[in-house]
Length: 142
Image (cartoon, rainbow, N blue to C red):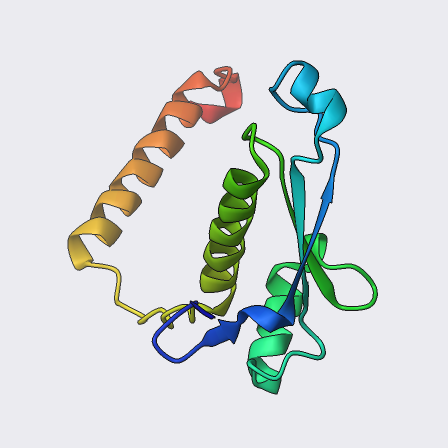
């Protein structure tokens, strides 16, 4: 099965590894008996699905979630069942990768409108006049 990240990027499920452990989330006695926490592992550095530039983007933008070996870790323990946590971990994974691979539009430089510049200068002159009037009056000023 392929996990679709964007129109150009899809990751085969065999590149993902899932581990389970005991959850600290909701579930009562279920928490003490069943491994409901799911951790998804994705080796960014050795992925055949991502190009080198995409790998660099993901490594830079998700640096806090990637360990020294270049493996992305996604934990989920918000649900009572293992399958629900697995689905939630997959959703989080796809959302994070989607955001990390999104290219930011370059900002177009625009001119500051003439009216805005004039208003700014008027305000600066007004503030300067206010400050001038606050000064103590000295005899040599007259």
